[in-house]
Length: 239
Image 1 (cartoon, rainbow, N blue to C red):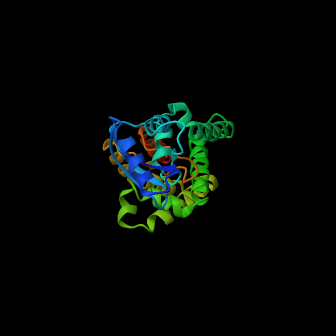
Image 2 (cartoon, one colour; image 1 turned 45 degrees about the horizontal axis):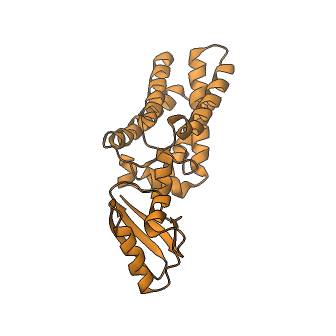
Image 3 (cartoon, rainbow, N blue to C red; image 1 turned 60 degrees about the vertical axis):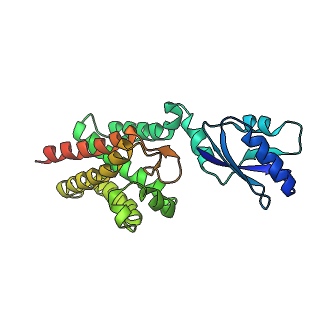
């Protein structure tokens, strides 16, 4: 694995050589590229070394102070990977709980109405988060969605589709058309999700836009599958 760090105190080529030599002496450091211009150091390591361990390698009490580079997002991703499952998916779970609770309370104990209300809430809330940063969502979605990879503009259109579906479920617009559209859209969307999870790609799930850093996982598959299942059940109920 390779990460970028900032090493303060590197003021000459002699400093560069000294810091590089110290880092390479660590058994888990494969290579170290120290730059004088911006004081940034790119380190390739066999296992992830903490900043504390790297500082120890360079030497404590010296003028050289190492810290993670804020522009290297792999540091944030690594930090997130150590979070518990509950902490990672807390935002998604809270949102689902709110939507589910409101759906049940407004359904008069009718399963079909509860599912319809849940779908309305799901699409409206999830599209809202995507609209907060449409460009960032489209960029993230293009990392795994089959259609967006070939047609990037679809990443900008998708939140509008979710918004339209949310309004359609909320207003009761043509249930057959609405549920068939949901089944097709969510079913197609799940293809890219399944491919990413199966191939174990470490990418961000764009379900909540760019607001929360949720990793792609089986949770995303369940989310899409649930929407497909509900639309299918509602279609059966319509007939």
